[in-house]
Length: 356
Image (cartoon, rainbow, N blue to C red; front, top):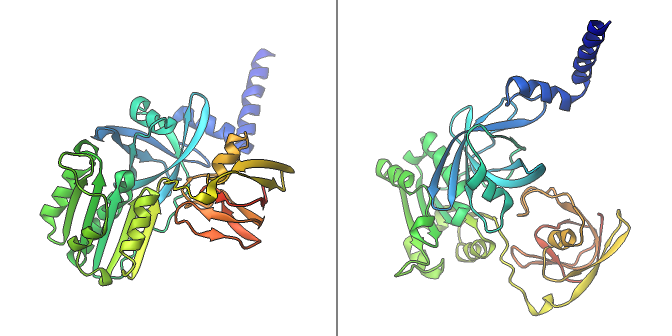
C-alpha cells in the first residue's frame, strides 16, 4: 500500500507540473539550472573587473533569451536575500549563446553592489525582453558617439556590432568618453585595439577629476569633431550630459540619446507639495513638487509598476486625466489632459489625477 501511495504522489506531482509552469521550472532546474518553460535565464561563466568599480560578466543564455539589437537594454531580474529586484542594463552580444553584462557600482545600489561584491560564477538570473531605440541604424557617413560614466556600455555594444558587421570599412566612428578618473575608464584596451586595427575608428577619453583635469562636455569640444551636419550622433550618460549633447549637436540630422540617471535641477516652481489623486486606488496623496512621481509614491509606501526608471521601457506609463507635469530629463512641461505619463521621469507641478 505504501509503494502505491508513493507512486501516486509522484504521478500527481508530475501531472501538476505539466499544468503548473512554476513547478515545471522547479523540476527542470534540478536537471539544468538554465532550463525553463517560460523564462529567459542566464548563468555567469566569467567575471572580471574592467575598471576599479565596474565588473564585466560573461553570461551563458538559455534558448528563451532574446539577444536584442546592439545598443538596446534588457530588464535584469535577480533575487537577493529572498527578494526579487529588477534593473535595466545594456548588454553586448558575444556570440549566439553568450552575452556580456557590464555593471558599474552605484552608491547604496543593492543590485549593482551584489553584482560586484557577491555574484559568482554559476549564479543564474533572469533577463526580460530587450527594448530601446539606440540601435545600429546609421544613415550617414559618420557616427559620433558621446558617453559619460556607465553610458559607455551601449556604445561598447554598438561598436562591437559595427566591427563584426564590417561597417567600419565604410563608416567613420568617433567616440568621446568622459569619466572622473583614469581608474573609472572601462574597456580602454579594447577601444585602443579597435583603433589600431581600423583607421575609421578613433576615440578619446576625458578625465574630469584628474590633475590637470579635462573639461566636462561643452561647446569647445565641437572643435574635435568634423562634419556634424553629416553625422549620426549617439549619446548616453546622466540627464545633464544628455541635455548638453542635444543642445550642442542640434545641427546633426539624427541625435539619439538615453539618460541613465536623473539630474534633478530644481527651479523656483519646485517648492511645496501637490495632491495626486489615484483613481484606481481611490487615494489622494500629497507629494513634493520637483521629484519623480514614481519615487514620491514609493516614499508613501505604494509600489507602482515600473522597470528601467529612465523613461525607456514604458512599464510605468499611466493615464493622466488632469494636471501639469515637468519632464525631469529635458525640462518640458505638459499641461494637456488625457495624456500618457511616464511617472519615473516626470514630476508634478500642480494637483494631478492619474490612473493608478
